[in-house]
Length: 373
Image 1 (tube, rainbow, N blue to C red):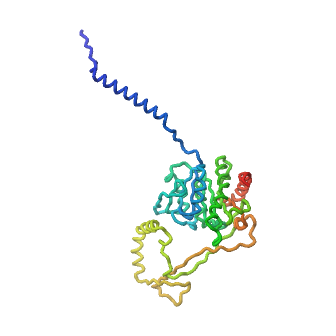
Image 2 (cartoon, rainbow, N blue to C red):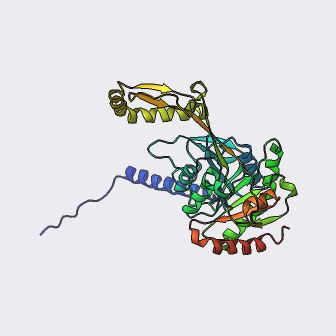
Image 3 (tube, rainbow, N blue to C red):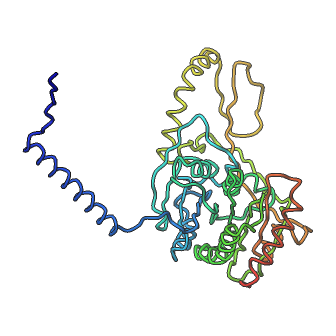
């Protein structure tokens, strides 16, 4: 039986081409490896990462002074996420059913954004990972805010809400405010206030990294109106003090539109959002009020009896008036700040934890600032 052997010989020219291609491939890989050894090794920043927000908006002088101080020595990786307009008295409100606008901004050399929302919105967005590509900052600072946040005024404060939102998200936080006095304080006081609060910020960051910073609370720090002549740092309790609300009736022609208080972008965004919601309601309202007559009045009282077919429209403006407190205890924030102390008021999310955190913060401050005083 004859045996046939299959000829597997490959054409010589093809073999030569394949060998040359293999050699070129090896040389290319070797060159890439050599180039890689000369490339700088890029590592994640080892600097402590800080998020800064405020209540008065991205253009606030206090915010700029604070960020410039934090970035000056390149010790920290500073990010800013702040409202695009003044939201000082918005409390802990958040924005729902509306789209927020976020724009890049220039603030003291930091990576900064302005947001068409509240301080709580800014902190929540920044910590969500949707805006910044980070895991979690070491510390969140709400400041430097212009105006004291003592007593029950904290409940209305957008600045305090920014720090509280950080604590809710599991990040240590500080709220820092200057006790600005009308016709007395000046811009240089804001810069001095930053100088005064920097040791507290450095101590907080150091001890957060060591794991010995007080837990389950954030610190509301008040800087007295004359920062450089302060009497020292005092741990205080929240006082029952609150600004008085003064409501005044105003005439229709002095009633400013909402757009007067908001940027053009913000006003337009709100108006567009309202169009869809108001479309169906407007038709129903027209049917309901087709037989009614609006009567605009300027005073609280109304002379005469109105027809059942008339609706009353009034305009009011509210102003906050600070009132002096008498016979308040020495360790309350309002009195200590007025007497010239830097006040540190620990605030918890839980009312029954106040005594415990008060003691914890007192112990921490005694150790943390022992070398700075």
